[in-house]
Structure formats: C-alpha cells, structure tokens
Length: 269
Ligand code: GLP
Image 1 (spheres, rainbow, N blue to C red):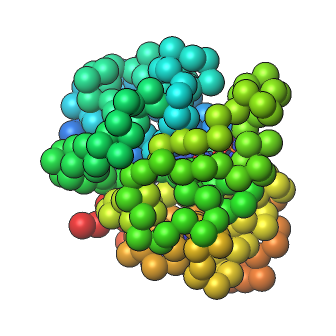
Image 2 (image 1 turned 135 degrees about the vertical axis):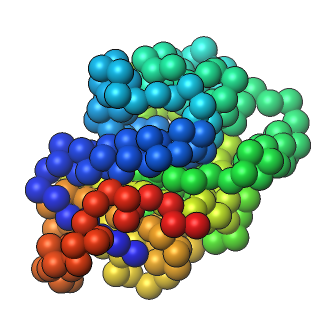
C-alpha cells in the first residue's frame, strides 16, 4: 500500500491526474475503472482540460463504472450514468460504446451482473481502478460486512450511505434508492492498480481504518491492504487520524530517484 499525503484536495487530485495522464499516454487503449461522488470531480476536470488542449486522447480508452442505483434510469439526474456524462464523458472523445455502467433498470439483475463481470474479463480486465470512500469505509457500494470475495451484484445501502447521498437527490432521503448494483470487492481487487482518493475531515476515520485498522469486512476498503498495487492519496484532513502519518510522509519524501516519476505508479502487471 502506498500512502501519499498531500496538503490539500487540489494537490491530491493533481497527483491522481498526473498518474492517469501518464498511464493513458503510455497505453492509449487502457481499461479504466471509474467512480462517482464529489471526490473524483477535480480529477475529471483536469483530464478534460488536457483533452481540450489536445494533450490527451481517449478515443481508444474503455471504462467501467463501479456502480449504479437500482430502478433509476440513465436519464435521471441522480443516476451515475448521467453523472458520468455530465462530468466527464460529454467533454472528452471517449466512444460512448466503450463506456460501461451497470444498468439500474435491468430486468434480470443477477444476469446483468454476471454479464458485467464477463465483459470486464473479455476486455482484458481493469488496468487502473479509481475509488472514493464512503464515511463507513465502503468502496463502490460495497457496504460494511460485504463479502471480501464478492462479485458484481445487488446490494442494500446502509442508512448512513442513504443520508450521505441524499444531497444528490435534492436532500430528499426518501428518494434515495435502497438498492444498488455494484462491482464486488473481489472484482475491484482484480484490477491491476487501485487508486483510492480520500479528502476532508469526514473521511478521516474511514481512512484510518482502511490503512491502519485490522483487515475486516466491517471496513470494506481495508481489503486494499492485501492488494499488490494500491495507492491511497489523501489530504491532511483525511490523514488527520493516522498514527503513522509522519512515517508515510517520510517514505514518500525519501523515495529512490527511480520511484519518483508517475511511471512508477502505472499498473505494473
Ligand atoms: C458513493 C459512491 C462511492 C463514493 C462515495 C463517496 O457511495 N458509490 O463510489 O466513493 O459515494 O462519495 P463522495 O466522494 O461524494 O464523498
């Protein structure tokens, strides 16, 4: 696990953008795993900026999103399909047919989930999976006590996540769907490189539990302790509860010269 602590959300987002840009240029047909929520927005803005100035090309890129609300159509403003179009896809030259998001209105959800898994495998697997983190330590929509070996499937949200996400439904808690489709923890763990972003005080406990807590299904993100290549990028606020904060900074600041470029953070497999 590589822990990168930077002063602000902006600096953390820039670091993540640097890695993404380098890896997309190195492998133009890269398979990206993408996330929603407020956390990745500055990263998407930065990638859009580079597409606009002609320095980044998404024409061969494929993407798979982590999750979607059940029963919500892709045209609904709170759907993750809508979110991705509004905040990223509509502003770059990724081909719509190369962007995959679980379909919240699928008639047969178990079959749809199986097909999603098959598609990820058929495309060659995810090279870089971007993750945010829920205040309860969830990744994707894998809530606490999700099986650490789980695959794409339907999940029921916790009350806390429903409350956290009501902001995307005009603050109306009752409008937030209780069910979602999410890539499983086992699915996420098969990505060659995982980059988790955590910013702000309200993520400090989840980040502490993820990095330093015991490995437990009660904190789904703690599974990343066992991933071969997981990079956790946090700001000072999100890092504020870490016991070994100074050590992580020491490690980062004393990297050997050959580990200092973004190439070291590209998928190694
Ligand atoms: C949702 C998403 C997660 C995201 C989390 C945090 O639950 N399913 O993928 O990481 O929200 O959102 P935010 O980044 O807005 O704090």
